[in-house]
Length: 287
Length: 287
Image (cartoon, rainbow over the protein chains, first blue to last red):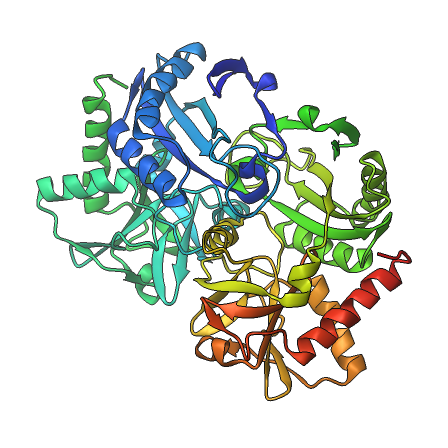
């Protein structure tokens, strides 16, 4: 496996960073996860916008021009790893770089660490068709979830709980409402109306969420951006989660309780199919 | 500078870890900061207890015996760096190790990454005597602050704000109460009674806090473990912060407003002096 690290394309074994990197010491970095189909990055501009917003939030010196240049890096990493004929998950991370440990920022001369890797993505078709199960888990994360930082322990522990329960995702809740999934956004359907948490500092502005919202408008599906009350979660007619590797995946079971009739609902299926048409159509490559 | 990394003592330039280390990717690790005087680690057992608690919390496979063995590693790192004649700050971190990225835990065969470094500590005597200034900052951290994890962005941004204001520390507040400092615990004095946040998941159980609480009992100073209302912070008669590099340091100014008469108060000074006597006495080395 070939990875990009600070300007070089190197084998995994040579992709090494100083142990004093602030990513390792403080979780002081921002990342992105981008879907590729063939050699095209899906919704690159939207990912770049979000990357820029997080880096500005943490005040890491990495310009928009430097972000933009990573699109070609992603394409090359896909090629170097022989992933052009299929789909891949691109992982991009920029940390504040390596410096002697101080909580406050190091000198501006410290260069950020820039990392890009690609891994083959095999879409789990059966789960997309039949739906997945989820568990619920308290949202333990910090207060700026709109920045895609690597302070991810709240997400790690939630996904681990899901994994141990044999579920795909953990749906997070806080103060009586559903925020989002450990690595997805969450949508519910009540009486034909879609409902999802509004874009605040409490959730990540998902790129797949953004595409889904555009599709919802195009398809004329009514939607309310209001938090889903946690107590009503399992009373939803339909549930689905969405994300850059999850696409739109119906949720048919929560904590062992069937959602609706225990099968993917019609609005979820319509959006799943419309999303896939957009994904595979807009990047100009067939499945 | 010689560092310990995964069983080896290496120069800083050779202290490298895989970029896929979960410390870098998720902030998936626990750390400790230990004070040494000469070649003795102050309150080692208490640090080891806290380290163990955090590692158990995150379920990182690193046993108490492995933690205990790090005391000798710390001593050697102090020696290798020629710090035996003075004081040092020992930094210890254990991450869940390097593995292909999944939010859930990797296979149990993945070995944790173990890192120890030492840096010379020069005690800022003048600040200990005259007191420091602090700013206030919202507590943005996640919900398990009792585990000393490296998900530290909330602390980083707070200390950066302090640094930019020319202050030593940032005092964090949330829901109308003072939690703690960005890298210290906070004590206030109201009418002769000490007050500090109780030990809950909302704050770090500071080792210096623990020693201070023992000294408070020995000296017969009345204390209440109740959160300090944020609105009353600058109305305190005295304030001090404490931590493994801060010891007991009076706070004489908050957001530019003098605390009390703007000078270290008598209870703060008594505890500062008692703490130093314990620090330099119990480890068996003079200043």
